[in-house]
Each structure stands twice: as C-alpha cells, then as structure tokens.
Image (cartoon, rainbow, N blue to C red; front, side):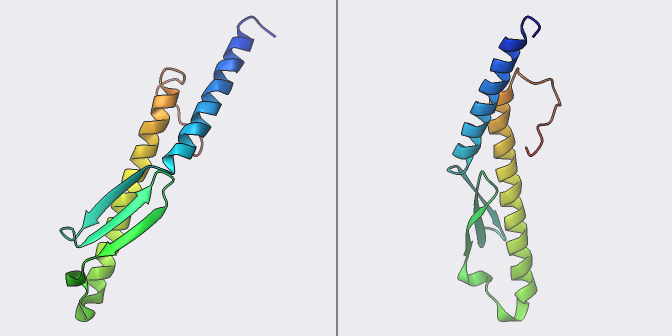
Length: 108
C-alpha cells in the first residue's frame, strides 16, 4: 500500500461511520409544512417519511373534494422537500472538507 493510503482509508471509514450515525439521527428530526393557509399541516422526518397529516375541519367541503386533495398533495410535497433539504444539510456537515465540491454520494 502506498504511503498515506492507510490514513485515507481510515478517514473514509470514519466518514462512513459518521454518515451512518447522522442518517440514524435524521429519523428523530422532523419538519412540518402547511398548505391552504395552515388548513393542512404535514409532518415528516429526516428519513422522508410522513409522520402525520392534520386537516382543519374548515378544509373539509364535500362539494370540493378536489381542493382538499390538492392541498394535501401540496403540503406533503413541501414537507418532503424540507425533509430532503434537512438531510442534505446534515450529511453536508459530515462530508464537509472530505469530498470534492459538487460530488454526490449515492442515495443522498
């Protein structure tokens, strides 16, 4: 093995361990987003799993089911986008300075 390769391999192993730890912790972190002026609220965790959907009674109109469906979709998409951003930020903390700029890690 070339000089320095052992150090590089240890650094990569350390980064992998820290990424696994950060990924596990993301499951405990949440984001919430709203649609329809707060009539729909969706909470997701850092693993991009929807944890809850809250629907204000005023949003329930049997004559306008499509509006409610659209609001739910909008709130879910916003929550998932926020969860993805949170994941990217957390993983960026782990990889900062260890990876070349703009290098993507598969699955993140």
